[in-house]
Each structure stands twice: as C-alpha cells, then as structure tokens.
Image (spheres, protein in one colour):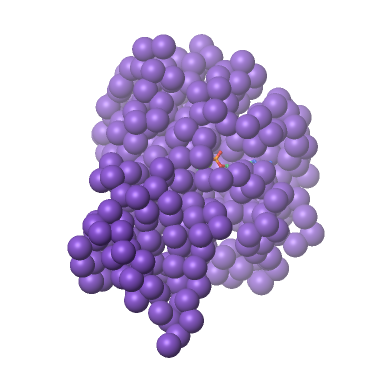
Length: 338
Ligand code: TXA
Ligand code: MG
C-alpha cells in the first residue's frame, strides 16, 4: 500500500484536504490523524471490513475494542442506549476532550469493533483536525492509537510513519498533541463509575464532577478494559519504572553500571551524569506530553535500558505512572529510604 501524507494546519483547516481524507474513510480506507491526546488510526466504524484493516495494520488482537470517535453528543446518543444522566453531565462538561465513556451499545456499531462486547467506548475529541475529519466523513470513526500494537503511542506524524508507513492509506500530519497521553476510559455501565484507564482527565476532576461516586481500578482490576491486559508502550530497551525515597540514587547506581548505554527519564534538573539524558521538563503535564517521544528516543539513541523516575501520583501524574508501569512490565522498582 502506498501511504499518502497530507499536512493540515490545525489553526487554519484546509477543507479540500479534509475532504480528501474523509473520502478515503468513506471508501473503506484507514487514515491516521492527530487528536489532542495521541495520533489515532481511523476508519468508518460502521464498515467491518475497514475496521478489520485497522486491526491488521496495527497487529492488534481482535478482542481489544476500539474507541468510537464522534463530533457531537447527538451522534453519541445515536450509537449508545440507556445513557445515564450523569454520563450526559460528563459529556457536557468534558467533551470535546480526553475522556472516553463506556456505555451500552445500541447495536448500530458492529460488535467486531468493540471486541465482541455489548458496550462501546465513545469519545468526542477537541482537536480541530479530528473534529473536521469526523464531520466531513459523516460517520462515527473507530480509532485506536496509530502505533504498532505494543509500541509507545504516537505523538507526531513521524512516530506514525515509523510504525505504519506502507500499512495505511493516509497520514495526516497536524502537529503535536496537547496532552501526549491517551484519554481517560470511564465505565458508566456499572453502578459506581469506574476508571478503566487513567488519562488526561484526572481522577480528581471526575470524582469532583460525580460527587465522589467513582472507583479507580489500578493494575489488574483493569481487566475489564481488554487493552490494559497487554504489554504496552514498550520500546526495545528494557524499561525500569522507579519510585520511592531512594529513587535517584538507585537510578544513578544501576544506570551508571551500564557505562553510558542506559537512558534516564527524569526532570530537567536531574543529575544525569554520563547516562543518555531524556529530560521531560518540569511538571507532570510536561512528562505526559514527552513520555512516548522519550521512550521512542531511547531506542533511537541505542539505549540498553531505560530508567524512568516516576512523578507524583496525582492528576495526570497517575496516568504517566500507569503507562510507565505498563512499559516496565515486571520491572517496577519501589525503593526504600536509607
Ligand atoms: O486518546 C485516546 O483514547 C486515543 C485517541 C486516538 O483517541 N485512542 C486510544 O485507543 O488510545 P486505544 O485503542 O489505543 O485504546 C482504547 C482503550 C483500550 O484499553 C480498550 O481496551 C478500551 O479503550 N476500550 C475501548 N472500548 C471499550 C469497551 N467497550 N469496554 C472496555 N474498554 C474499552
Ligand atoms: Mg493504544
């Protein structure tokens, strides 16, 4: 397959270019596009053949459901049923934005799109290119992150090319996402709403909106979100996710032993020594915005291992820790004080 690259300025949408990408979607093609979280790989959610092509291009297991992207609350209501009042309230409050809401499916979206489940995850993004594309296509767009399955999510068109060049019809290049980490996935089909995947809309924000009626299933409680079962976000280098009072010393000792072949992900003011320095900035939101780029960068710089200093577990930091631990697998290190 020949992959076409279309550049679209999010601040000055060229509707001719959007039409070209939207036509590809209408004709059963697959199109990578920017969102405010990460780049997505989209297809017409009503077209099972097109959706199969997404699973094939990514090498994604068929039981891992895709998120359906819409451009209005009205469209969301057409594909979901028994939508609870508080779900509508959250839509009003957090859409367009990085929140995916799991609802009962009305049966309009083929079951193969949502891994055979009776529920669907729906999200209304805020990114102008994503919204224009969904509008012009005139159909809901099923879109996972536009990376090969298991790799870090893409935060630039270049990341998408690295993984999917020759495997997709079009890549829309539209700049860097604001958040850099995927949407929060919130299950509203259970008596107490449950966060299945922490993301850019924080537990604290949702808890406030829901008057405290919310649970957060970290780790394997997240089995209900099939995507959270798989190894994820991983560069080729081994990732160690490190926290605790002695974290900096631990990193310096273990990384130092690799004689310059270890990468360290830490804030700008960290003492990186002779290690491959992957500074993320200052705040947890800087960390989220840079994390996937830095994991890919570790491979490009030939790192044998990556030692990442975890941020504080609050706000978007919780989502960063979640992704780091997924990337690390068993290599989660909690140090004790000395
Ligand atoms: O920010 C995002 O959400 C990005 C952009 C492109 O929108 N998309 C994204 O998609 O991250 P993906 O496929 O990489 O992750 C979707 C997550 C998976 O963990 C999947 O298991 C979960 O959402 N999910 C989707 N539908 C679900 C459902 N019906 N029930 C439970 N989990 C669901
Ligand atoms: Mg993904």
